[in-house]
Amino acid sequence: MPLTISTWNINSVRLRIELVAKFLKATRPDVLCLQETKCPDDAFPLKRLARLGYTHVATNGQKGYHGVAIVSRLPFEATDRRCFCEKQDCRHVSVTFGERAGLKDPATVHNFYVPAGGDEPDPLVNPKFAHKLAFLDEMRVSPGLHPQNGARAILVGDLNVAPLEHDVWSHKQMLRVVSHTPIECEKLGAVRSAGGWVDAMRSKVPDSEKLYTWWSYRAADWEASDRGRRLDHVWVSPAIGDRVAAMTVTRAARGWPQPSDHVPVTVKLDI
Image (tube, rainbow, N blue to C red):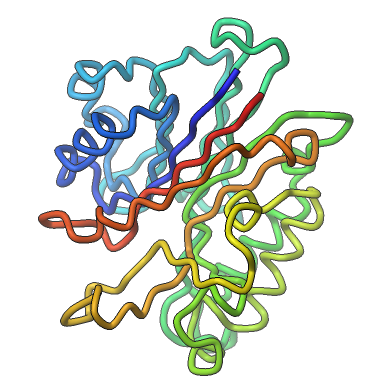
């Protein structure tokens, strides 16, 4: 069956719930993974989402910072939330879909919000950057992120690293900018390699083509300057690496009123 999954750093789900509604009405994914919800679990806008047909929700939120959620039209069998680097930051939630969702074999969706890392790309003077590198190291060795023996899994989210040359507007100028430094790209690549993950977005767009999901609020005209980065990702396990039927980046969402600086990414899987 086809399974459609979207991921979006929404930068406050309550502030931008009408943008979420607009996207869901237009796209109708089976599953929407949100990051940076900035919302405690007991304040999550469940009723608004239920009216749109998304009645199954798994949240891991906190007031004012971070936060992730998985919103689904399909029921899931189990949920999980993990802490990384011995911190209580809400940066991961996962759900497993099974027979109740119409799947013959189970599939697990991991939703991540990796630390941004601050502005200075030196872990010795910038604790935020040190935290980001440690977080990626912990992801690399996390047993649950090594899908084996035909396990069907999807990992999505704002991973806050643009790893490839054409994931940024200027590879040369971005090498000393947090999100595209060599050490970050190397560590994110190690996470992907350790789990055998397939980059679903780049399976549809060649590495030689520019591909962005984020444009800074600082730009006077984000569209004209087009200084973007691909910070949002969708990976699939080897068992479904050849099942990516389509991929869409909703670039227009960056121009909506009071937008997030990220835009949704949607992948259709034949699983």
